Length: 166
Image (tube, rainbow, N blue to C red; front, side, top):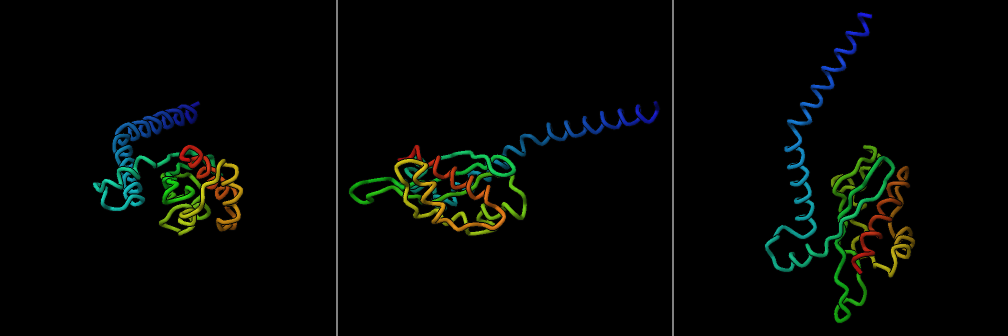
């Protein structure tokens, strides 16, 4: 009975310490996530965020979430403006991953820090429906060995984000 009681006390103390740590660091974690997101937005729009053309681009940013292999992948997509005078069809200007839980080493290719793969979406044409874009992009975006589910999820997420931009 004593070992069970000792284990129970240890579990309660460990749980309390974990809960206290989470409570004490929640604001810092939220601030770090917001700063990271702002850095990604600045990377997409360029460093001069006060530029009026960047404000127009910021209005076009599309956020989406998609289920990857290990969890949710949060994406930020910047579609072009489809202006019939200058640009006959809409296309993708930039795609970045805000957050993911993919397996380290396997899912690393979706971040610009580890691989230029995500940059391959830039310039792709947005089709009338997300299904059209997704099917077309599977042939135009490089395959990644061992990460088929993650790759398909990102393509699907980008197509879904673009659905609302056209």
